[in-house]
Length: 117
Image (cartoon, rainbow, N blue to C red; front, side, top):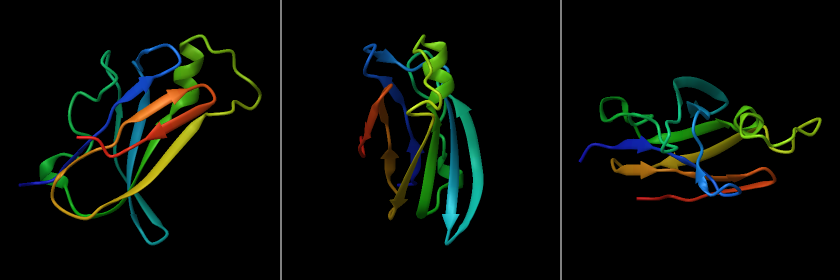
């Protein structure tokens, strides 16, 4: 089985998928950080394709960066100055060739994540 990475974002405050949220993927090697992909979520809160497809998969340490502030502003959440949640980085490891699904459950003042299926 070849590995790959998917993600999606759910707006738990509004009870809907987070449409139009920009996500960037980085591979980390010590302190070095290389950008591999950048995508925007669709109406289902998912990217249209795996953010790290099978042909680019490698084990290692990665970081998904969710640009939540812009999404929250478009969703009508009044911005504080500075916004409590703006850019949310999630750093995680992938140790085997498998499907990794790393979702973000988002509200204006909190978030959670897990390894999904």
